[in-house]
Image (cartoon, rainbow, N blue to C red):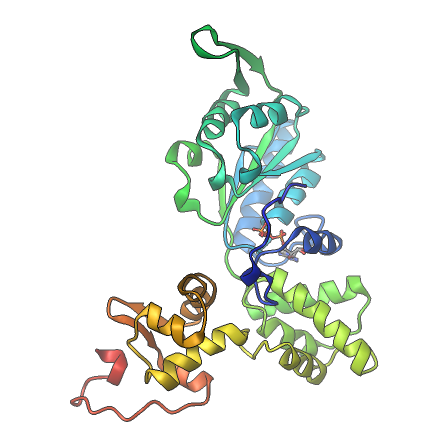
Length: 354
Ligand SMILES: Nc1ncnc2c1ncn2[C@@H]1O[C@H](COP(=O)(O)OP(=O)(O)OP(=O)(O)O)[C@@H](O)[C@H]1O
């Protein structure tokens, strides 16, 4: 596997959606092996099931598949399931690992018939590689350039039919000619609490950890809609249950453990809460500029903007406005604080109606 990029420090948080190589190795044991085992994502699952069944009935290779969605929602898992359902081997690489068109040519020319090529972070591939991929996807052919300058010649190379599974967190960044060459695009959504609870119970089963439904629900509720985070929290709660109790996970044990790890009931961690806390206590709920907020929290501007804010916005706790960041009523409620009295004329909803 080539997930070569180092995970930034801020992504080493317990609630980060990204994973490093070590974690991916641990995750391998928890991956569902077929579509029936894959929890949630009903629509994508159903559509993919049809695509794969039809390809199998025709005795051919499945169409190229593009999976988009946030990290940790199961794109890699689905690509492995596609290969398994087609009875085909899978090759895994990523956009950033393909710097030159030659890197891609080497991979493509070594594929066997029907093989699945999983290209993670496909939006981060180099432009020449991307252009080579167009032809490979459409005509199962690449032009290998031999030599340099005016004497360079293109030698056409036939490829066996293969299925490309591209994964991206940013479907909008893909050039339309690339997007159009996928026969099927599946958009992965964040998971609901009931689905995450199933993920936790299934993983606990595989890890041979006793957990009751309330314990699973407690972990699910703090997992930010993301199976990867649910599995990671489960592993930390398992440690706690083993050291501090009899190993079994109940609601109480899960809550105690996640309090120790500073992951709150809604899945906010220390950084998220620090941002909200500063916004509410120091700036009365805003509006306040991003730079000022970052200084108040003692973090880089980018950290606040790219690491903390997306989840706070998604949760409806913070809003980005042209005049600065503002807290929503839910943010006051979440931190157990009372918004300051407003002196606005009747009909205006305080800070939020401005
Ligand atoms: N639907 C699901 N049911 C059960 N477990 C799941 C599901 N989706 C993901 N997981 C688990 O979550 C973890 C992360 O999944 P996966 O690596 O497939 O995510 P990803 O979307 O490819 O992430 P990235 O974008 O970072 O590569 C794995 O351990 C996987 O088993």
